Amino acid sequence: MKKATKRLFAAAAGAAVGTAAVRAVHDAARNMADMAMNRELTEQQSLLMQATGKPHPRREASHPADGINHAESRISAVLSASGARLAPTGAGSGEARPASMICWRKSRTIPGSPKEQELEKQKDAAAEWLRDSACQKVEITAHDGIRLIGHLHLAESPKRTVIAVHGWRASWTGRFGLIADFLYENGCNVLYIEQRAHGASGGKYIGFGLLERYDLLDWIDWVNEQDSACFPIYLFGLSMGAATVLMTAGESLPDNVHGVIADSGYTSPRDEWKYVAENNMHYNYKLMEKYVDKLAMERIGYHADEYSSTQAMQECRTPVLFIHGTADTFVPIEMTYENYKACAAPKRLLIVPGAGHCQGYQLEQARYEEELLRFWQEFDKVDADS
Image (cartoon, rainbow, N blue to C red; front, side):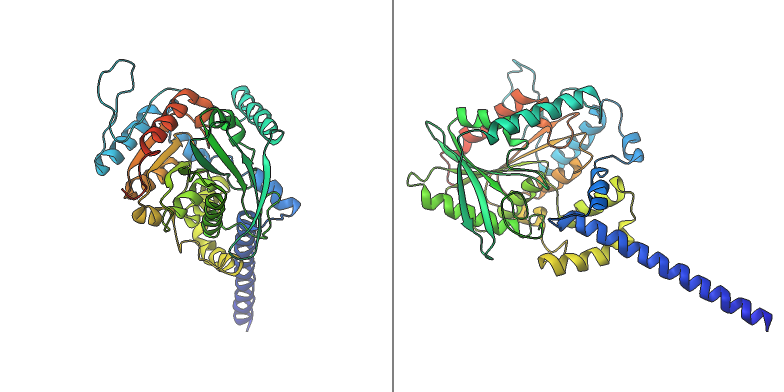
């Protein structure tokens, strides 16, 4: 009788532990889903989100201090598989530039270091400058009735139109403030959009590109309705904005969309959530994936892996310039390699050694601008489907 009672208590205790474990997994999954998709966050979730940028110690230990040799071997393998080759970048090399180009330079920042803090100050000052500039506020209604806001900055002598798409929980000024002057001086009318569930735009949930690709199609239509000159259009995205422009490139686009610029884009929402959960938040994503996916379906109407940048690239016919930093601990550089390999359109690749998430312009400004100018020069006069 005593043994039976002990077994009963043991079973009850095991069930309680099991129930608590399941509840803990569900709580972690809901936190993960809320931080990813909800416009509004609790104070606890906001604090937890601030910690997601901290790399997992194992990932830091896996990279050499300069990151160059490790990155070079990985990129060379990617280029070999895709038929491209590593280009010499030294001045006066005399060799023709290949279809895809990589530049190398040792530059690395450490989270929390004076260098990192200085880069953040530069970004904030540039964002304030753009916010105070002479932009015209515009508004459209998206395909699903959501109110979307944009800010149009017209060049004095326009040659093209750039639709600038910011990243996850970022603002339309953010990092685009750093490059706004360059875009203006080089004949770009720029429409800086506020993604759904961000800033002044409507929407309760962030769709990680699954919803936003259709918003971007609406913005392209709006630009063409306003633009009697029908300038070539380029879709320029950072982080989640990069994934958004890549997913949009898998859709049927107007002929005057001549190019896509994707800086630090991920392969799919599922891949990005898994990476952040495991590497930055130290969750076991396999345990929570099913529940996170269920919440995604309930909130945005899509499974996390229902569509991806990689799938879009397989259908893409619009030239793409891919950009990424080797020290990115938020969107791993391997995701850009996968998107690049999958891309069926003319493609270019700019890798910035030592650059963190979306830091390429600050650390390699001259090279970044050179690649943009070359990309525009090559494709301004070329039909997107030629």
